[in-house]
Image 1: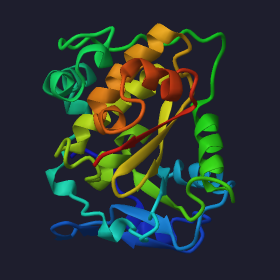
Image 2: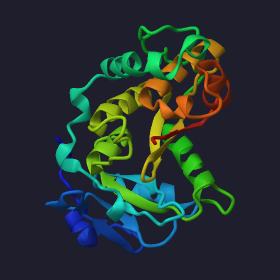
Image 3: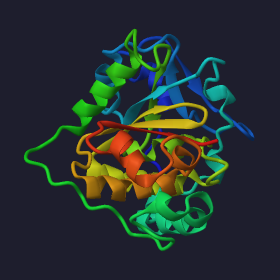
Length: 268
């Protein structure tokens, strides 16, 4: 996969002001030829994200939170597979989502569940209209702070730095296999994340063994826009709707998409 020059091997002499951490080169096929990511040895705090963003971006590294879950499954146990990952820029979100929709829509969701759409892919949702500039990096920092505070969903999360061209490419850059049962080449899903970066200002904020959280700077604000995005979410991650409650696009859009500043995905 085409990536930026990897600054991780020289991290110790880079001059970055980083807390103690660990370089990871463990993959599903054995050690990789260079580190895939660096992550902190201790839990992240609400102020960790902006500090790592400021430090890492000077050398081409982007931050992401890592969730080990209740079983403490950190990246060394994630079955990372960079050798089977292509380049996100070689794929198109419209094609990827259309293929998934046609494969899953009739089997997983039927009748009223996929209204107002049918078995034919409805196309990409429109870009929301915004009244003024929205800082996507600031929104990502806000979501990261909420996730890592004492009452957050990920109080024990570690902060990581990854060599990636853009936030949407982070899963591909490390060969993340969280969606393996849905898609073997995560770069195809990263192509969708790139499209969401462009249309909704998303940033990849957190990764776990099989789940993903993104911040959303400009979420859809109307019912029609939200339902169109819900269709994209279903194609991207069918388990979000088919194996969850609510299990219709309209209900999902109302509860998890419209006006929401973060989106979460989980693959069974």
